[in-house]
Amino acid sequence: MNSETIKFSRKSAPEKTARMVESIVGCKWSLTVYNLLKNDIRRPGEMVKSVEGLTTKVLNACLKRNIEFAIVERESFNEIPPRVEYRVTALGDKFIHILTELEKLQTEIDDGNL
Image 1: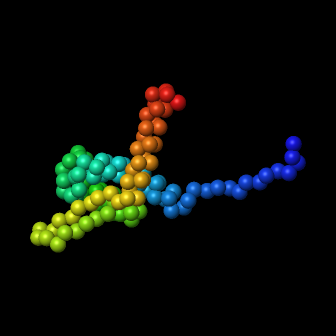
Image 2: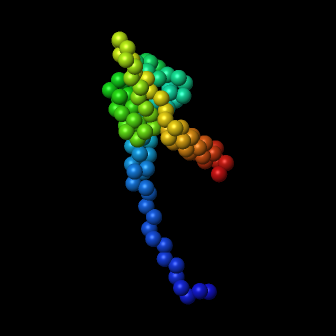
Image 3: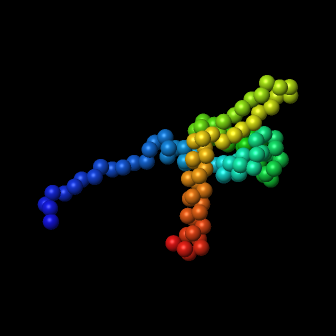
């Protein structure tokens, strides 16, 4: 056996990514918002009407957080009355795919398949 010991440096989570995951997954409404967007419900008023318990204030905070991390983007239309729509970005699609895979893994664990 080789007498030389291999030393590994401590690996820490990527700071920005870890903060994003903690912030978004920690928001109980983010996954609901992604589901609404997936079902073409893009306007804030429609979102609030579609989900029992979701308020405009909470939705705006959730959307702001997701925009900050470039998961969701906001589009404003120059119309009267003003109209705003949200959609998932390319990065958001990748992030949501990862969350979906984690959900599948949890289901397998819950079902005793792992």
